[in-house]
Length: 70
Image 1 (cartoon, helix red, strand yellow):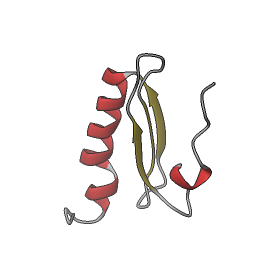
Image 2 (tube, one colour; image 1 turned 135 degrees about the horizontal axis):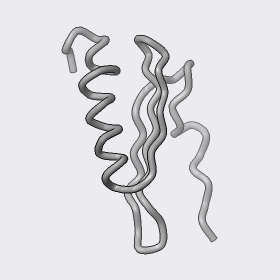
Image 3 (cartoon, one colour; image 1 turned 135 degrees about the vertical axis):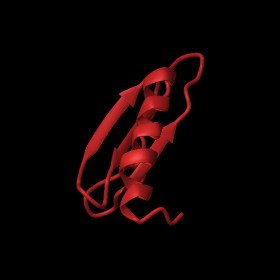
Image 4 (cartoon, one colour; image 1 turned 180 degrees about the vertical axis):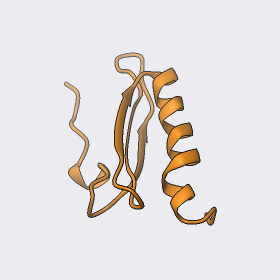
């Protein structure tokens, strides 16, 4: 019933970044990141946890390792 996300959308060490998938009435929101600067990775489920994941990535990983450039 629920489709698995294509592997090309999931962050990896070779292709770091942030992925967020919004929830539906049948599923919770999901998020993943792999930092290209330090290699940190994390995963979250649910709106509150995904928002915290995005805030963490933005403040401490991806953009932070690029010197504030966006």
